[in-house]
Image 1: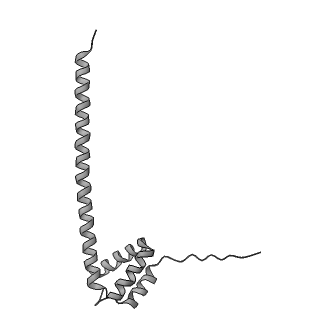
Image 2: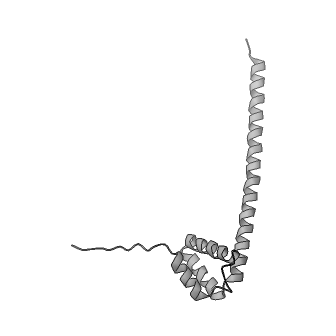
Length: 117
């Protein structure tokens, strides 16, 4: 006794499931591309705001910080862009103002007090 119709139906279901998975994978790729494009646009907009509101010296200092502490520099860039877009930046931020901003935004330094016995 052969279950040929059941085998055929099972094969159809497998093919249908494979097609659904492939469709989902393609859709996921499109979503990822859209997210990447949106992130690139946001980064470009942030860079434009920074160029407009930072002097060359301030931008160089921020780039130097970015080399050693990229996460911290990203937070500073977001903060400066937010300040500029909200209208709280009068004129351009110079290097001294950037130093002060970096000091304010820097996480508390942990001091290691080593005592010898």
